[in-house]
Image: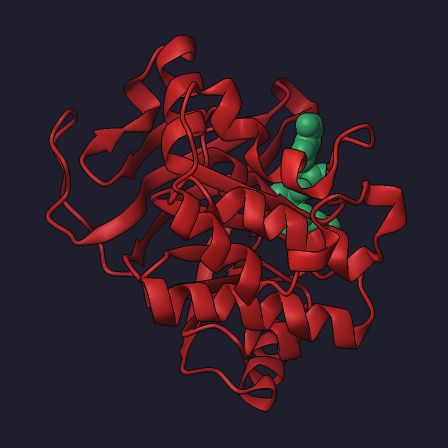
Length: 255
Ligand SMILES: Nc1ncnc2c1ncn2[C@@H]1O[C@H](COP(=O)(O)OP(=O)(O)OP(=O)(O)O)[C@@H](O)[C@H]1O
Ligand SMILES: [Mg+2]
């Protein structure tokens, strides 16, 4: 159940959430063809936790994640990243915030083919004029099992290895939140399990906050909590999910 939150515009809601949506609405298009992708969503994602977002196709999962991550702008409502209201930022401020405080992992890996694995990992930090901490990079690379693949280009890597490079790229700047939209959607179950295990260990061992969209109840069971969406609304939650509990909850949505 979502808890209603009273907020005054410009004032951060009282919460320890790493990222939070307050009455978030997103409408695509206008008039008769308008699609209400998010119809007023109140949800917070606790710091140092792994949360999965699930729900039927078209329920608004990607829209919610893109608004939370500042990749898309909401029609109404607020998004807070810690004490920063994303929904009040100018484009240039949002670009900087995304670069400095948010990590992404996409279904399609999105690595640059001409760069090596190591170059792909460090590119966002280089663009931001930051230097990755050497010890931290060594630690991330070791945990991702990529040490002997650093000089390889993406086409020389398996899908699972490419996605692990993308996870490393997201973790290196130590962002406030890593968002992952179907990160295992293009992987077989073994490679998927490796990527999910890495996301979970980044949460358990380094306190990273991770928010992941997935269709897969087995993937969702790696999370600490599952948030369910249906028709652009919050439709329930599962804490300490098992795959079976998630399947039951999804069945309850009728989706
Ligand atoms: N750019 C857009 N223009 C118009 N409608 C859109 C756009 N993006 C998404 N929608 C619509 O908004 C609704 C929510 O889409 P969204 O992509 O968030 O769903 P989803 O839950 O991520 O679905 P899936 O599981 O299929 O990825 C859908 O009805 C979709 O058709
Ligand atoms: Mg989607």
